[in-house]
Image (tube, rainbow over the protein chains, first blue to last red):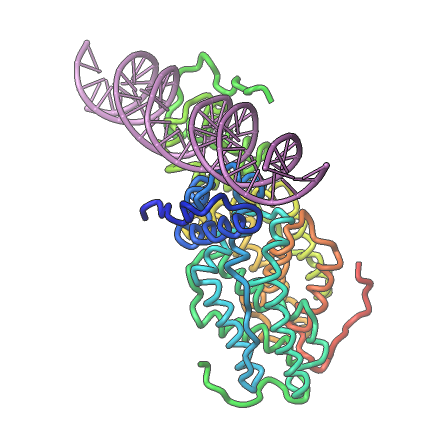
Length: 215
Length: 215
DNA sequence: GTTTCAAGGTACTTGGCGTACCTTATATCT
DNA sequence: AGATATAAGGTACGCCAAGTACCTTGAAAC
């Protein structure tokens, strides 16, 4: 909690350009994880990076832009979609992953950021490519694709809008309830009452495939 | 834009209790519609109501609580769900209504409020009962119920989670894109690719009922 | 009429964004 | 190498709005 000044090498000359920018982003990311979006102040970041507000404002137009940039450096990767062999298993696994991701500290930051962005398209655009949006929907698509190949899903279900449904319902739960984490029953319900009926039609194989326990 | 002082009857004695509270809420609602959530300051509301910050803080613990209260007085009513005779028609109508509601100034305020609340359950709880959440989902439920009665939908679709789907997808669009209004094609897509396949199974009547133009 | 309580008034503290302006180190150009 | 441009460092503001403190004053209750 002490100002943690010692980030600057002290007697190592004046940093410039990329090097400095990196240092700032690292500092900002640290502040972000420690104090959340609301607690990220320019002063704090500047001190922590061993520089001053001026320098920050030369690179980012405002507090939020810096926060978003810092977040992006935090949330880089995304892993491959699960493959349990069954559609329901995959869906549940993916949705649970999404939930724990949203419930995690990182997710909290993301939610805070989304809130603070308050629907500013240019900021949202920067937030989308990673932990959220595209990548996630892509995972759902491959999952559905596999199910179609297995004959477990109707081909028309291989559609971006369909793929976005589970995530949207989950997010909806967060937004309207404001809970820190969604109970597992909700996830199961989303899968069983919405996702599965949606991707399987009521075709030849009808409602059920293999009897699988809910967890 | 002038301070609009003249709200207090000037020579009408000191207002108290409910009367004063009403005046404050009215003022706050006005500020809210004019300047949005971010532009609502305690000072402004106080001046406009012809009183002072002190009095506000005696009733609401902070800025946001007042904003929420003011919003609630703005968003009272909700009308009956549409009845076009066909499931698709109803769904489209309801979704379009939801969209224009979200795109309207009121919707913008609500979105700002949701953003500012940043997932604080107690505030969200106060936001839910009206323009958003319950009421809307109820409308979807009656709509689905009617379709079930007509044999247009599978009975299992009469489920709250299903009812929340279209709204969730729409909200998702707002959140991830941050647009002021969603193009109609998106609404149609939500209905045709998600909602209809979800509520109709692929039962006896399969994919289509009546050929209706998309708009 | 006196007491009590809420409203009015005013000023202040705090915190943080964003800006201005100058000084100083480093990189680049000649 | 020296001169010059550029970007970093430092410091101090202006501004605004949240929330608080404290006192005064009107009105209601007793």
